[in-house]
Image 1 (cartoon, helix red, strand yellow):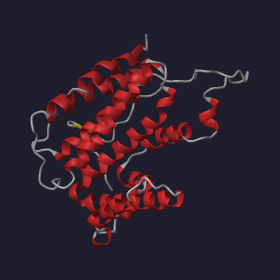
Image 2 (cartoon, one colour):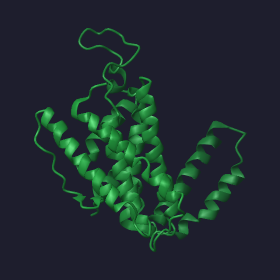
Image 3 (tube, rainbow, N blue to C red):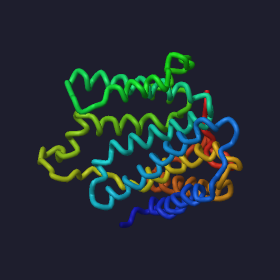
Image 4 (cartoon, helix red, strand yellow):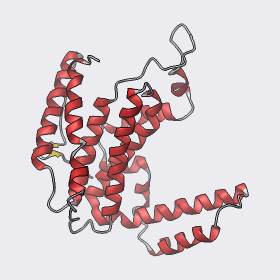
Length: 262
């Protein structure tokens, strides 16, 4: 497939995908201030990493359109990693209280549905162990994507997120992907799917730049600097081909993207 300048994203994506797995095999040390959330950072990063891999697999077999829920999840987890990178252990109580709330909602739903295969005592034990009432509730508002985006995101994240929501939830966007416009011909396969490598490259780099903040020492400085500089060059060439001005990089540093806060 000839994607013009966009073909430049694939080699840097493949290079970036190798960084984290190789690092974790070396038994990295989590730095002070991130001891309580190191496991969250790893899990959230893996949601990004494996989410990107899943998107690429679906793309190869013609299901890029159906990957919208995974793309949305990747964007959400990248933002969560930015939050974690900025605040470290300060997010622990907020996440714990959110987990307790989610477990209680599930317990209430299961009870209302009359399911008998669920052990309610186990659910109650989870909530009791978390003890949410004893934890700091001041940042509970950051459990919501919109509030987290306003504080730790940037203007580039929201349009893509909203586009994926439109394709994920039942609505006009989710339906019209399988209808030829303006003829109205009904389609078995969407003809609007976009090649997924550019999205995957961008989101994976965002995730890597955020997750490196938890480690001591911080890994991949030179590798990420080189990959990000190539990413910039490819993106500017893509924009030139599309008749657009070069991109602005307000959060780009010589170590990669600097997660914004405040």
